[in-house]
Each structure stands twice: as structure tokens, then as C-alpha cells.
Length: 158
Figure 1 (spheres, helix red, strand yellow):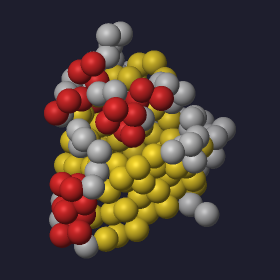
Figure 2 (cartoon, one colour; figure 1 turned 90 degrees about the horizontal axis):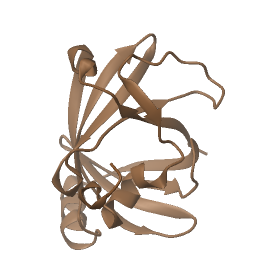
Figure 3 (tube, helix red, strand yellow; figure 1 turned 135 degrees about the vertical axis):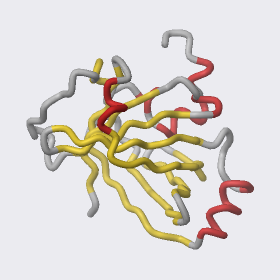
Figure 4 (cartoon, one colour; figure 1 turned 60 degrees about the vertical axis):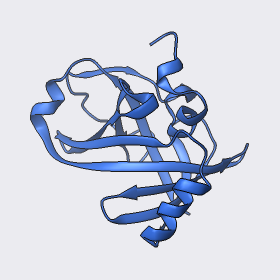
């Protein structure tokens, strides 16, 4: 079983930008969600993936990912996925032995910036960079799947 242990944080300032090691554009959409799981199609660079995650709230989730043909993913995003699609640039920043992923959203979620760190276990200790703000791992609004039905542009308490 594939497991994802991930913590999410708000960003305090732009200091992280000076430490970017690479970036990737993502375009993704959701085929469906229910109480047990979400199913996502994602295109990044010239690759496409089908991703299934358990619908649990928190830092620990089951996750499965499979590469699929790019042409199929393009058609699914256009014809089968709920709108709006999630569009974002993910920036990778190294800090004291961990890679932080900073997602800068566009489209209906423009203005939202979230930092994520993947961990080996739930108790893993890590150093927080000075630009890390409040943890939002347990706030479902910050889950990509929730940004489809409740995009950042509609939030009243940003």
C-alpha cells in the first residue's frame, strides 16, 4: 500500500523564492470524490497520471498513482473532470535535509500559496524555514480536491 504523510502550511513571505531548485507546472482535475476517496487526473510537463487518494482529513493518507497516456489525460481533463481545473506551479525548495513543495495557484485559486512537506513518519522532526506560517493540514479548504468546489476566490476569511 502506498502511503502519503504530508503536512501543509501557509506562507508568511517571499523569502522562499531565493532557494528554488526547480519548478513544475501542474494542470489537474478530479473525476470524482466520495467519503472514501478522490480520483485525480494530473498533467505535468509531458507526463500524465491517474491518482487515487483516501479521503481522510489530516497528514496521513493512502495514495496510489499510475502513469497514463498524455492524450487520454488531456481528453479527461477537458471532458470528464469537474471544473474549475486546478492550475498551479510547484516550486521545490531544499531546507535542512527536506524538500518543501510550494504550490502557487492560478485561475480561480489565484492568490493561494501553500507549502507542503512529505515525511517518512508522522512523528518525524523537521526544521521550519522562517517563511513558514500556520499549519493547515487539518483544514480541508486547503486540499486540492476541495478547491474545485470552493475555490480560493470565494473564501471570505483569507
